[in-house]
Image 1 (cartoon, rainbow, N blue to C red):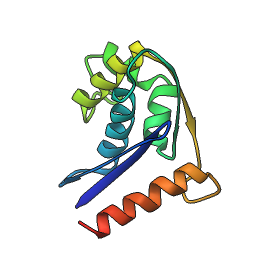
Image 2: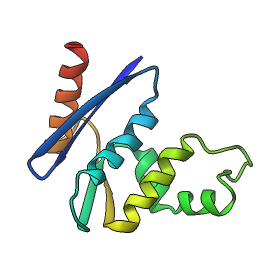
Image 3: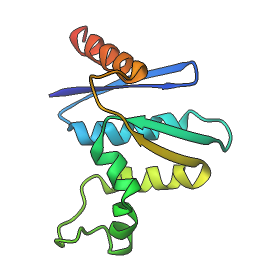
Length: 124
């Protein structure tokens, strides 16, 4: 499986892909890459169609996981700990707000990101 991510930071664009990965991993990586592109502390609004990423932050799951040595409420180990730790670090630099958008609907930027990710995958 090859998954691509496409993010826009202001007018900058970034796209990337990985072989043998998961959609959840690439959703986290997209947020990380976007935050890494910022040159100084900023107020950031992340619009994502990933309920996994948005809920992990907005519902506070990530803070409970970290407090519980990266274990979920069922005691299983959280996946992608390295990425969640990196995201938390970057979020400590910026003031970050997450907004969940419906995928493949009326959000212009989400639809653009999806089209470009599909285009990149098809032209690998």
